[in-house]
Image (cartoon, rainbow, N blue to C red):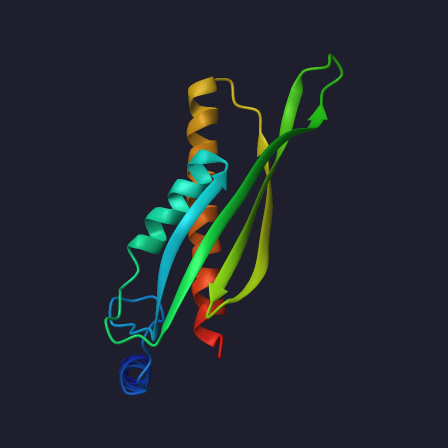
Length: 153
């Protein structure tokens, strides 16, 4: 019993003293700003990404101002059917291309995520699931973009 308490106290003090701070927390100070010029493609996916980029903290003293063009695509394909020909599973594919402009230089990076979804009995539940998939994937794409831009020299 005493060993367990001592071990937990040791772990807590070790973790709290290491100086770890999450990168995407509100304390994260970036040395760049992101401006969205245009977006095209899947409406929901592009809007979720725009919203998350707008919510990132802005730095008034930033020396890098990235201009971003967003091009997104979302494809829902039939993956499997049962013996009677009814759809049992879908394949969900989301892809985003970010064209990044900085100081008259332009480059494009692409991110792609895939998932499988079972057929729902209710169309409303199925569309809700797809919408939450798009929202979660857009968070992943935005985090990857911010990580990429933070490493950019």
